[in-house]
Image (cartoon, rainbow, N blue to C red; front, top):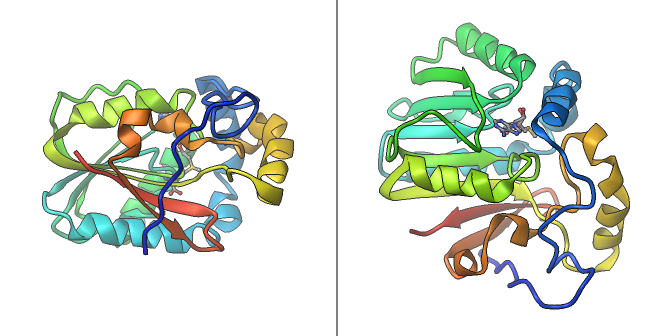
Length: 228
Ligand SMILES: C[S@@+](CC[C@H](N)C(=O)[O-])C[C@H]1O[C@@H](n2cnc3c(N)ncnc32)[C@H](O)[C@@H]1O
C-alpha cells in the first residue's frame, strides 16, 4: 500500500508550512542526547521501531547495487539484517552510539560491515557517487538541517542510485498534530523533533518523486523512497 505525503499548503502556523521545528537541535545537542540514550536506546526505542526498520532493510536488500551508506547508524540495530552481498558503511555523530554498533559488529562477526565512522551526515568526507544506496532510518528528524542530509545523500549516491528514509513525520492535523506540537519544546531532551514536518526534508520538487508507505505501529512512521 502506498500513501501520498501532502504538498505543503500555504498559511501560517500549520505543520504543512513549517520547515523549521519549534525547538532547534544543533550537533552538540544531538551528541549530548545520544550520549544519554546510548545505554537504553535498544530497549527504549528498538521494539517500537523494529518493524519499520526491518522493512526498510528488506527494501534495501531488494535493490540493485552493493554499496550501502547508512546515515546515523546509531547502535547498529539494522546491521545484522542486511544481505551478505551488500557492503555497508555506517556513520554517526555519537561516539557512544557508534561504540555499541562496533560491539554488535564484533559480537555477531558481520563481515559485510565495511566501516563505521564518526562523521556528520550533513557533510561527509566521501567522494561524490561513492554508494549505490543511502538510507537514513529515524535520522531525518534528528539532524540539525534535514535538507543538508538529503543533499548529502544525493551527492554521495551514484546516478540511478536509491535514497530511502524511515521516519516519523508530524501529522497534518487532528489530535496527533496537537500532541506533537505540545511535545516539540522537549526536542532537545528527546533528541528528535516530534513536530518534524515533511516539508523540512523534501522541497516541493521532491514531493512529486517520493513514494511513502505508512509503517507500524499505527502508521506513526513512514518508509519513503525518493526516485531519481
Ligand atoms: C534515533 S537514532 C537512529 C539510529 C538508527 N538509525 C536506528 O535505526 O536505530 C538517530 C541517530 O542519528 C544520529 N545523528 C543525528 N544527527 C546526525 C548527524 N548530523 N550526522 C550523523 N549522525 C547523526 C544520532 O547520533 C543517532 O545515533
